[in-house]
Length: 104
Picture (tube, rainbow, N blue to C red):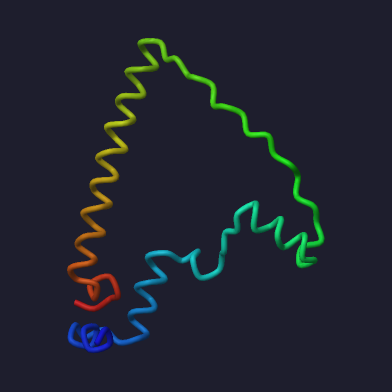
């Protein structure tokens, strides 16, 4: 059924792979394991290196003066607008995936 849906849009398997890879290229080459999983690997002999023990400290509170607070507020506005713009592009790509694959 999914194949029929993609086929109706004119996307073939190669184009779908390019689209998925473009959305998350690292997901094809990188896996992220948790520290507890690494410890299981080490205990079962699959990981020779010892992992350093971590001591997680609380994050210190940052207090801005007036100028720093104003600058931070401006940066926050900028990044919100940037995120909105990227979201609009992502939505446009979802509506017309062929456009981003060199097809018009």
